[in-house]
Each structure stands twice: as structure tokens, then as C-alpha cells.
Amino acid sequence: MKPITVLLAEDHTVVREGLRALLETEDDIEVIGEAQTGRQAVQLAKQLLPEVLVMDIAMPLLNGLEATRQILKAVPTTKVLILSAHGDDEYVDEVIGLGAAGYLMKQSSALVLSKAIREAHKGNKFFSPAIAKRLRDREENSPHGAAGRVKKRSAGLTSREVEVLQLIAEGKANKQTAAELGISIKTVEKHRQHLMSKLNLHDTAGLTRYALAAGIIAGGVRFTIE
Image (cartoon, rainbow, N blue to C red; front, side, top):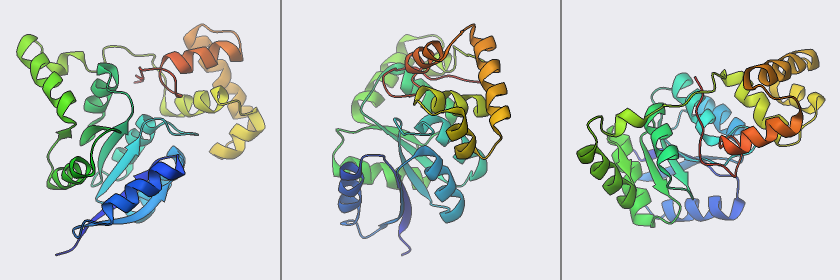
């Protein structure tokens, strides 16, 4: 039987190599690529067309949630499993809203990860046990269920603006941002001005604080755009 093809997106080399080593012990799973940044994950997903992509949220250059958004749009056949050290409801709700196949805590065992990949490949949703229980409890106790919480906040940022904001927050100069995104410096400057206007912020420090609070770069727990 043809193995399930998997792409790993994790910026920490030790963790990524550990995940590969764990999955390589499974006869029905084949790791066909590894990505160290969110942008590389998008590129490799388009190139390799993996059946399942395991994506860390806290990715450099392009965070895992925005990368997931772009991948699901460009390669709808790929099932994305989010991997995170955070189990906050805000993150989980975002994942549900994006249409990802599931959400795993980094503390999950190899058995749980392998099971999640198999379930995602079948078209099923899979969440770490503790998260799954919380979602069930919330569904039972809320008249709107889990879905009522999804995407309740929005900054109204476009995908490109989120990309530019993350690079600004990571300390990239306009020239570096332009090179990374393949656009002109003038276009970067326009995006920066639009961001400041939309968010009512006036300097790079303000944009960075917003990116942290919104979870666009590591350190926050929320991430929502239109």
C-alpha cells in the first residue's frame, strides 16, 4: 500500500529531526520534505503536494497559521495538522476556522502523532485528547458550540499585510522585506503605512507590540485576520 506522504514544517532542527525519526518507524508514513520557515512550507507544499502537512504555529518569516491559510487555498488536497506548544482556545478556534485537519500539542506521543496523520489522511479531524475534551465540553455547555467562538475578532488585515507585519516585527528592514516577498521597497513602505493607518499605530515599536499580542510572531496567543 502506498504510504501517506508527509511534509514537516518546524523551525527547530532538533524537533524536526525528532519528528522525522519518529515517523520513519511507521511503514505507512513517508516524510517527503522539511521546511524551516512558513514561507518555505508554502513553497514546498505547492511543489511536493504532500497528503498531510504537520505545521508548527511559531514559524519565522511567515507564521504557521498564515502559511496554513495560503497552503489550503493553493493546495486544497493537502491536510494540515497544526503542532503547537500552546493549547489556548484562541489558537484552537483559529485552526478550526482555517479548516485545518487538527491540532496537536507538542507534548503528544509518537503514537498520537501517527494516529493524527492517519485520521487527517482519511478526511477526519483530530485533536490532542485534552483539547478534544475541552471542545466537547464547550459544545455541550454553549448554545452556539465551539463554532460560535471562531473568528470573533478581526483586525481586517490582508494576507500580504500580515506577511509584511511579521517581517517588520522580526526586525527586517524595508529592503530585506522587499527581497523576501519579491516586491519593491516602495510597495513595502505603502503596506507599512496602510498597517499603521488600519491599526492606528504610529511606529515600528507599535507594530511589533501588536504582532506579539496578535500571535503573528511568537509570544502571543491570538491571531485573526479577514
